[in-house]
Length: 149
Image (tube, rainbow, N blue to C red):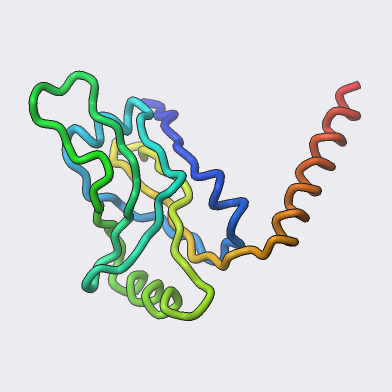
């Protein structure tokens, strides 16, 4: 069974320098996982934060499942991330340092059918870093065009 669900947060790759990446499980409701399998999720404004001792992802938009009857999930509710204790402790200490944040990168469904989210410890880019990223992207595109000719 091949799963091609791969919902990316392209904005995070542009806005942040990614330091460490982690793969976490997500605590979802039944209609949420079905909507993700349909590819109906949006991560553009999503971010991670600690509430109590647990890590949550906020503003992750998962649309309503099209075939559900009367019970619909809240579209932008906080969803708990499932990590090992040592990973949570490491993220909490690093995330509290000035300039660091935890951002979600992509949602995918693994071979067992579980939804997973890839998160990263990241540091915000400055404006000139973003311009450099755009220049590199344009140069790569131009080189690809020249190679195809």
